[in-house]
Image (cartoon, rainbow, N blue to C red; front, side):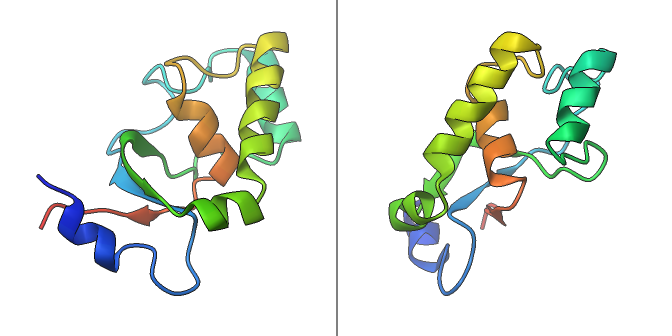
Length: 113
C-alpha cells in the first residue's frame, strides 16, 4: 500500500526517529541475528540487547525523521554495529539488522490502513 497518507500521521509528537512495518517473526532463528553463536550472544548481551524482547522492523518499509535520527546519534550507532559485526558476526541480511539494533527496536509501527 502507499505510505504517503501514513507519512502525515507517523512520527508526530515526541516519538522515535523511525516508523516502519513491524517484522512478525522473532529476531532469533530467522537469520536476522546470529543467536546460535555463544560469542555473538555475548556481544549482544554486552551491548544490552535483549534478543527475546527486541522488536524488529522492515527497513524497506520505513519513514525516518532525519532531525530525530541525527539528534539521537543513530548514524554512529549503525556504524558501531557494523564495526562490531566485522569482529564477531552478530547479524546477517545486510542493512536491516544494524538499523534495528541502532534504534534498540524502538520504532512506531506502520500498519496497513
